[in-house]
Length: 119
Ligand SMILES: [Zn+2]
Image (cartoon, rainbow, N blue to C red; front, side):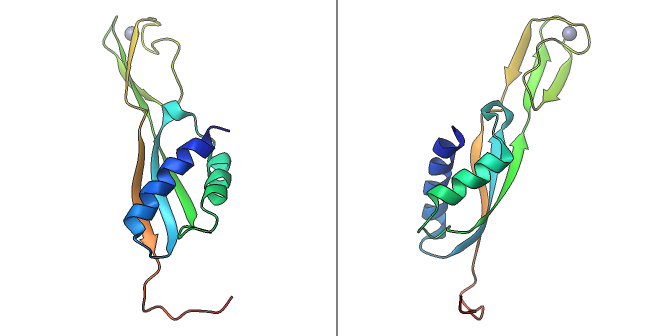
């Protein structure tokens, strides 16, 4: 499950940004090229974050599409899956850009003055 490796990298960034505060939610931008499965990412993050400040945090996944340019006709498209051929002319000479991002976009931390509920 390659999501596990991605989550370890994200968790490091979360811990740096949280600086010891309790994290309740994280938002991650991930390129379509990583072919991340939403539920697998959730499970992996829950696994690697056990016992850390992000234990139990919710994960919002934002998939960043790949930009595809056809070198035959110049048609540009965005795809969340790798295109095999240009959708305009059927050309196979495609240039792809982006889609390999893995970015921790935002974290939500528990406010210090929020009353705590035991359990
Ligand atoms: Zn084309």
